[in-house]
Length: 276
Image (tube, rainbow, N blue to C red):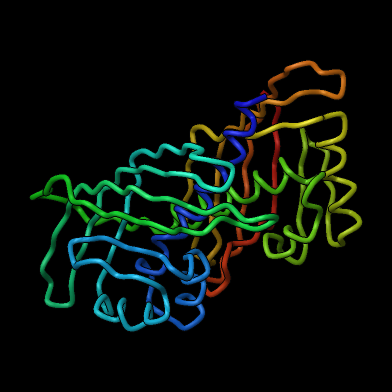
């Protein structure tokens, strides 16, 4: 099914897109800057109001001008397209909010036009990013967006890993898992704390499926006092069964994510699944 492949690619692109903003929304560390460089092609071209920059070797120096800024990037809409077998495009509109160390405040609507290069058994990387302001917002109340962007990048990668498990295996899950995961499926609870247990569970939700893809809806997240993030989301999975039937499965899921900001992704600690 063409639609399933498109959703899988969209989850890949959105994984990286929501990572794009995170380095600017929390204080800089070397690890966070390296995580940002991880999403960029060696020959990345970034075209923005501050000019055109090429490559990522001096990326750390380039972003040092943002030291001490409070930034929030509220994504309003995204559209992912396959340009070829090797390339995706991602268009997005956001609301950008900024408070600088001198207490000056600005907010713009911005359009992002990007291209990503696909890689075998790995996340795609940005090759081109064009950032164009489309309007100014005079009055605004600053609201952090890191929690939203952080949990959405995790979500899209988690879904992609599950949807492509048969071809890509279990290793990619390692950086997405807490030491121990509590799973609750319709009131049936169990603990996952080994790779074998994880394999058994993933096979239980993917066996009988030839190919499939998850789309999220009604996403809500919040940061908790202990540093974790709570997520509530409805998931719709389109899939083709081994008997070649086209089917749709809908679930409501609630997650708790552990969040070490210096790692590429948050990690899932608990999952509660209710079938809709």
